[in-house]
View 1: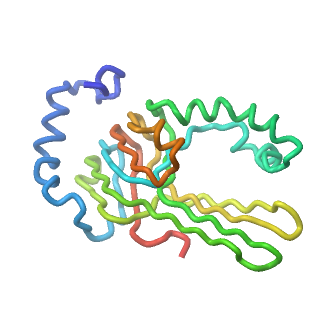
View 2: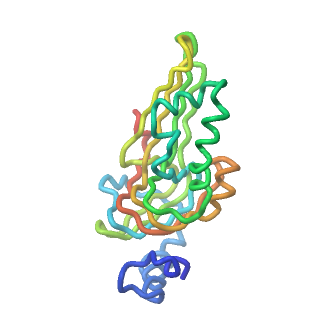
Length: 214
């Protein structure tokens, strides 16, 4: 009903038809075993209904002035200009917190590596835990347990100075999402370790049970 109010149901589909699709086609059976892992879904799904509850899932708005322009992104780490870059980032923060999502992609899992004076001092790997179900062009696809984004991985290396650098891997698991991300306000302030519940339609969805950077 919420999706219908915002015009997010496919053209010609009634609320009753959507409810039957969700409840009768797969949820009623799959709720009995929501965390059983299946084999790797290498193809993923396209043009699909997607519903999921998982942590370490971050729906990134696009474009973002500070995050998508390399010069401004590097300036964000300059302490003398941090007040200016924080001001420029306010629209990005607002779009991150609002629950309605139109066309963004989602990072699922992450890796952060810090190198100081040639030595790795920090190497943090975060996987996503939960479940995701989709119905679309490739039929019914589901992922349960611990997984990472399987579409592609965005990699970024940041040099803080001549002796310190950071590397960031952001695996993308959902692209072209239109829907609602519940608990988005809590998750954004509490950290991605808290679960996120989202439902909507996506252009592409795929995950992998193996870290994509290996």
